[in-house]
Length: 390
Image (tube, rainbow, N blue to C red):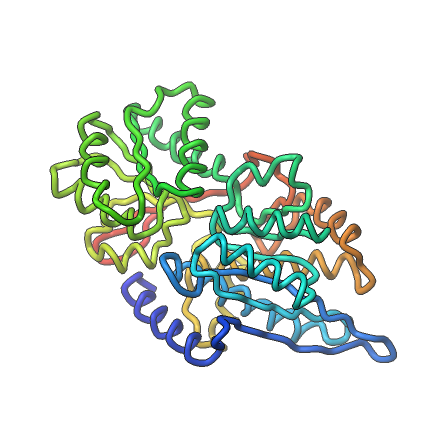
């Protein structure tokens, strides 16, 4: 399916999601309970704070929908086991303070067994802090800073690769095609700063020249023009972007209009669908890293499973939706392995041992540390008519 069609379908799915499941408090609830004969079932409550509105809403909505899709599948297939998932999703609007408040609500009021799938660097840090305070885990944060992978955060488990892994893939590609003059543009927030640190470290590790220019720009205001002027004056051959679709699209448009003819390399957090919505045919040639398989690669078992679930829903396939599906499948497997009588400590031990879990033709390592060279990261480019090329 090309991006133009996927984007239109994605908008339709978003409208249905907001119209049918979102309460005034910004909550989407999904619960089913079942139990094995003669034994009490256990419903495991997953608490998720996710941007259903705001700057990252297209990413958040797709990711959240993929999570719900697998939670439903898990409950339908595990009635006899006495384990069921209850996924509670609260909107944080991509604001860290709201994410922190949501984390407290989910853990204290809703008695969530663990936090799951927080979206955004600052929001994930807020979730990790709240989980540690309550003696539980944060599982599968989306776009968390690499510092959450350190020994100081043994309660945080990652399904996606690190920012360092994405950065190394990108700078190696630049080196392969002879691009040694690299610049950086990012949002002036926790995510942008974490991305800048990852790119600078990757360049040092690969013994490549330091960035010729770097700019962190606020999402609002008039500082982008001056920052981009400084970047372009440094004559970079490639510009790495770690920003949401709004900043990324505006930077690309302005730089091309001013005559820049070099390459653009974006981290996966940008989201293909929202970027295509912003740029249209001007998305041509941009290279974007991806941390899950293409949602069109039906030969891969996990993608085939995801597409089968999509067929029975009002959703459309997307990278973010597939990542949510994979994250939910991984947490479901960890809970299944831990068993109905699990405690936070036993669940954490099970997760720490899942260092080579085959989610369906796609392997993940929940304890990779800062870097995991075995993880597959694809670099894709987009044509003017929205086709994805590898």
